[in-house]
Image (cartoon, rainbow, N blue to C red; front, side):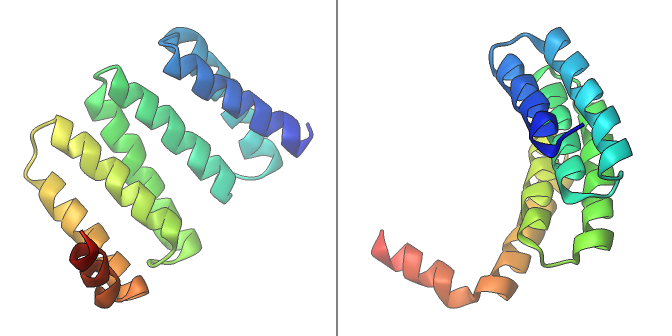
Amino acid sequence: MHHSTLMSMNNLAEVLSHQGKYDEAEVMYQQALAVMEMVLGKEHPETLSSVSSLANMLNHQSKHEEAKKIHQQVLNDKRRVLGKEHPSILRSMNNLGGVLGYQGKDEAEEMHRQAISVMEGVLGKSTFRDIKDQE
């Protein structure tokens, strides 16, 4: 299957999710992921991004524990594949922190603090200070 077709399937799943058509969206995500894993591999960044999208949808459905497990796995995979300071890691940390927040877990705060720490390490602390000073 062509890469563009895979991305279109994933985009359709995302639209269905935003429309609240969760059952249809989940089927489309699963179909797209099955093919992505075969074509691109389980650890390809686009495959991992699609897995995160599925987990976000599950979180919106209040399936927080399932979403948490998926986001944690994606974060672990991205750290191993992309390195600890890749921008995609920060997105995964925030996704996981969001799920933990919905669950009322104290770890949510720590996850978001870690994401900020990594971002400050990559962009520099002055970036955050400059933005705060402009407000």
